[in-house]
Amino acid sequence: MEEATRQTSAASPRQDRVRNFCIIAHIDHGKSTLADRLLQITGAVSERDMREQVLDTMDLERERGITIKASAVRLHYTARDGHPYTLNLIDTPGHVDFAYEVSRSLAACEGALLVVDAAQGVEAQTVANFMMALEHDLTVIPVINKIDLASARVEEARAALYEELALDPDDALLVSAKEGVGIGELLEAIVARIPAPSGSVGEPLRCLLFDSIFDIHRGVVGFVRVMSGTVRRGGSILMMASGTSYRVEEVGIFAPAMQACEELRTGDVGYIISGVKTLSDMRVGDTITDAHHPAPGPLPGYKVAKPMVFCGLYPVDNSEHDGLRDALERLQLNDAALSFEKETSEALGFGFRAGFLGLLHMEIVQERLEREYGLNLIATSPNVVYKVHLTDGTTTEVDNPADFPGQERIDSVEEPFVLARVFVPDEFVGPCMDLCGQRRGVYVDMRYGVGQRVTLTYELPLAEILVDFFDQLKSRSRGYASLDYEPSGTRVSSVVRLDIWLNGEPVDALSTIIHRDRAYERARSIVDRLKELLPRQQFRIHIQGAIAHRVIAAAAVRAFRKDVTAKCYGGDITRKRKLLERQKEGKKRMKMVGQVEIPQSAFMALLRVDE
Image (cartoon, rainbow, N blue to C red; front, side, top):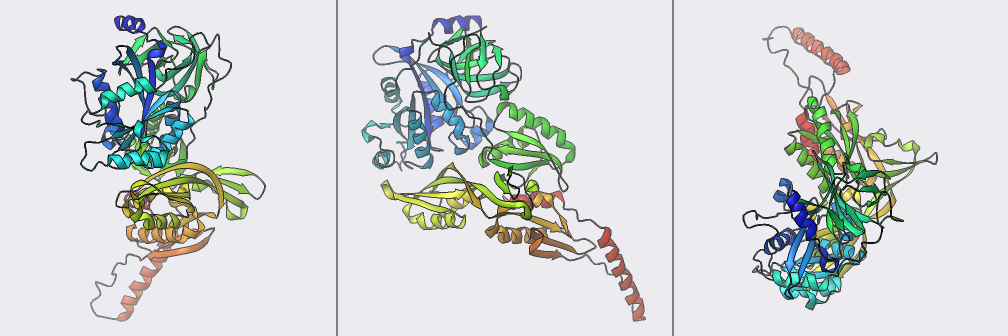
């Protein structure tokens, strides 16, 4: 380790020969594969250690083919002019759920490679990520990837770059990340087009914290870009958002494994370990400065990532409750955007109300809980955060149906909306517009682009795209449509709480907050499904869907009737009547004291269908 430290410190790069860049793209356009080729050609990873998706270290990332956590790596490249350059690549998540993390990663760079699939062309998140790069004033190098495919339409992709993004098509580089074609020209373009870092070593220390992970042995490891000044091992740092200070135990670079060095200077990308025990003390977007000589102010753009989607997580076996709590605490160490608090349900027992950045984030957390910690979970229907204005003049935020006030106390309810862009071939415009209309979408714009591609823009309630909107979109467009969205504020809506009753008793786990116009459809669906799933009892079960004690859908499960007259062969009819009357009285008493218990299998089947 000492030898590595001396080598790294001695080879500290000249600031004018440093290039900091990231790769941005729509999902599945070849971002991780391009990163692999850059690592391979610059020798950052040996041929023996080379594998697909090198920077995606989680099994879930590799299986799903998506990047969930940002990562960084230092590349060494000797340009054709003979000068050595240091290239810091920051690999970012591409999904809209992780947009805030992407924005912090972009803020740590001077340039971005915008990757476009030669067969698919410009898609929804291509546009969204490009706009984010422009907001951070980055130099964008367009890269048309997958030119080796038989279905590649290179000229259409060039034209789309001009039509959709106003980029010069002659600036686009043609590469095949899979085959390694054009990577040399791409590295030359990075050196020539992307500017060197600004800032001075003599200025006060300011580091942008663009990501962090938790190491069980060493605490929080902060991923930083040094904007000005120098941070050294043994120095003292101050977190400007929380106001806490720490002693620096180690600084280093990613090569791509963590490699310690003596200092990080202006323009460097690396890591800081300082004995921080929780991610809440080292949040993404914070500014790190010198504790003894602090900078006059933090870097711009910091905000705390706020959960947008909430659901209840309950163990199928109540004895696993403590295990679920421990697992959530461990996941939260590596994911500061995950929040949770205790929750109790009469139907499901003890569990937790968890908050997520979006539906993909929720799916990933749930899958990690089940796979990495061996838990068997029930997740309730996802809900968004509603602003409820009460008649007494106060306002409260509600993310749990159980906390939704009675209708007599509500003055108005605001629900979150998103500005959604759907990229789709023109032949599928009708079905996609029909879907947006069904989901209470407000039409904004429709624009025709290159290659018969149409961009539909709608304002949609966030709650309406949570359930199965993306699946329906793919189904109606035969898989060709792509979706991107961003928050666009809140609007007053006619929102109500839908309750499900069994024999007059509410089932809290099945309550949901829904728009009044869709309440009957949802109630009918749940009631009919429960009728199929509930086992028959010795008494009749009444199933009802209700809004504010007004029943809007109902069904019943008939009583299981034992044939008490089976042993009566002929004889006096009064004997049979006596047995039937006795059974009738018994059923009446049983109905008074009997309770309807929904089996866990029914809950799991019902909530799966609901999702």
